[in-house]
Image 1 (tube, rainbow, N blue to C red):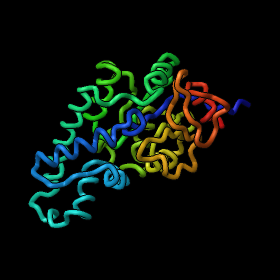
Image 2: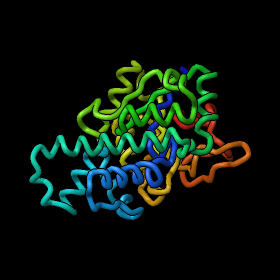
Image 3: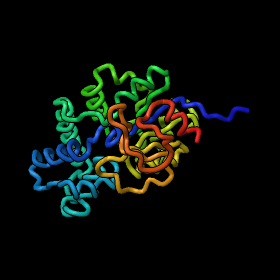
Length: 256
């Protein structure tokens, strides 16, 4: 009996995975929004690295207030105020995208095109907002690229964000596929925990903020997806002397 698993879909995380958006995208946009709101907050590179342990932008603002500006939690309608601040931050982030300031990481565009040619479904599972996803995809892959993805799970579509598995369960339900025939591509420990809890195989491509995190349980840990002229660096897990990630490589990962 053939027990091989067939790769039917690839589920991509967004921030840090498709593009290294955190340090030079979201962080800059948060600081611009703080300035617009007359706040003397500044999230430097190291502080933002710590804040990334909290998934979700609104959640991150609240966490920061609890730890660094607790007196502000007494504001009237604090939840609505946080939502407004986050909405302003999203606008700044979108304008960074539109200015072409956020290139995709190595191998991302190549792999997406290859998966489409081989009729393997594409999906997104992220805690970032739909606006951010749209801005990134259209600025890097073109207006039509949104339609390349069969399902996009983004933002507050589920109540519990990563490391909870809810977003992956939701995307798998929408795809109507079993986790055993899919793989998630992530860059963070929270993302890995989320995907593993949904029974997915996981490929990690580390990003600037995540390279020191614990990735035990991942099928493979790489520097990035690699290009023929720019091979990835292998960190852990399966490789078989590959130098860039293609559909054959992903088939082997889920079949390991």
